[in-house]
Length: 299
Image (cartoon, rainbow, N blue to C red):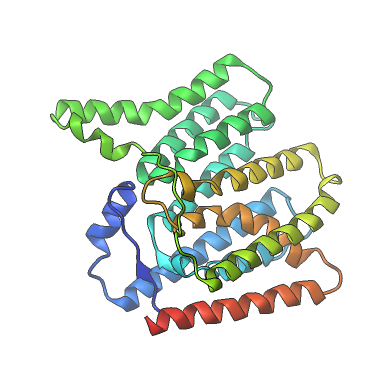
C-alpha cells in the first residue's frame, strides 16, 4: 500500500484541528504506521463487538477482513482524516445503543449516549446526523417514556452548554460557530472518474449480496439481535447522506458508512456454503485496491 496522506479541514471539528497541529510535519513512515494501527484496531474492535452481540451465527474474522479490505476501495479512504478517526466514536455509540434493550439503568445509559453523540459532533461536524440514529434507536428499542427522551436530549445539549459557558467567560462566544455543523446540500464529487464509479458500484453490489444472505438468517435471530441489526441498518442509511449535506464534506466523509456497510457485506463473505461468490467478490476487491494504490503512487 502507498503512504497515506493526511486530509485536514480545520472547519469541520476538533479532530481536524488536532491532526493539523500534531501530524502535519511527521515523517511519511510514522504516518503510514499510524494509519495501519487505526485501521487494524477499528477492524478488530468491530469484529469483537459483532461477535459478542451474536449478530453472526459463527465466530470468525470475516468482519475485520472486510473492514480492512474496504478501506482501500476509495482513494480518499487511504488517508488519515477526521472521518476515519470518528469511526471509533461511531462504533462506541453503536455499542451503547445495543445495550439499551432490557437495560436495568436505561436513563443513565441514555444520558451517556446523548453526551457521547454531542462530543462526537464537536469532534467532527458531519456526525451531527447521528442524532437521527439515536432517536430512531430509542424509539425502536425502548417503549415510549417521556423521561428517557428528555434525558437523551439533555445529554446531547449538555456539552454545548458547557462549551458556550466557557466561551462566554473567556469572551470568545463569537467563535461558537466553529463548533456548530453547517448544512449545505452539494455533490461530494462534482466530476467523478470512471474508477470511482466502478468502486462505488462494487460496494453497492456487495451490499446487495450481503443483505440477501443476511435476510435469510435474520428471521431466525432473537428479538434483541434483530433490533441491533435494525439500528445498524438505520446507521447505514443515515450516514450515507452525510457527504451530501455538510459543508466541506467529500468522499473522505463517506468512510463513516464503513462500519454498517462492513457489517452487512460480511454476510456475503461468511454465509455462502459455496465459495464461488465470496472468492469472486474478494478478488474483484483486490483488483480495485491495487489500481487505487497504483494511482496514489503515481501522484
